[in-house]
Image 1 (tube, rainbow, N blue to C red):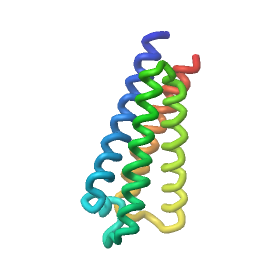
Image 2 (cartoon, one colour):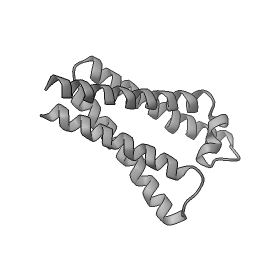
Image 3 (tube, rainbow, N blue to C red):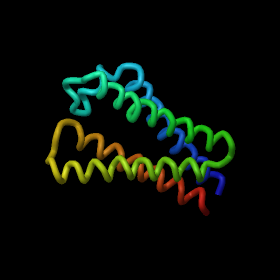
Image 4 (cartoon, rainbow, N blue to C red):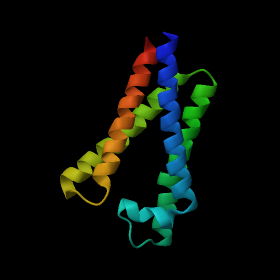
Length: 128
């Protein structure tokens, strides 16, 4: 049981690290990383939006994951990861269905689905 919980917590730690890295990237240098999302001509308003969602929200998710792990509530951390990643992936799937394959979105979708599977694995292991 403890071995499964350890691997689940390691998976969550990896997801938290990735959320943190992406959050820092988009918070500190949105104009550098926004083109990978398809944003080519940034206005002040769109830069603020990228900083808020891709920077601030992703940093907040990373903090929630690490807080859950640190306070012994890894199951809640897994739930936060799972729901947020399914939200990103679901929105991306709908967007790709409406607008077709654009830019790096297929790569991001694959990453989101892999991380969602890791989060689901963690949630299940921490529930047993």
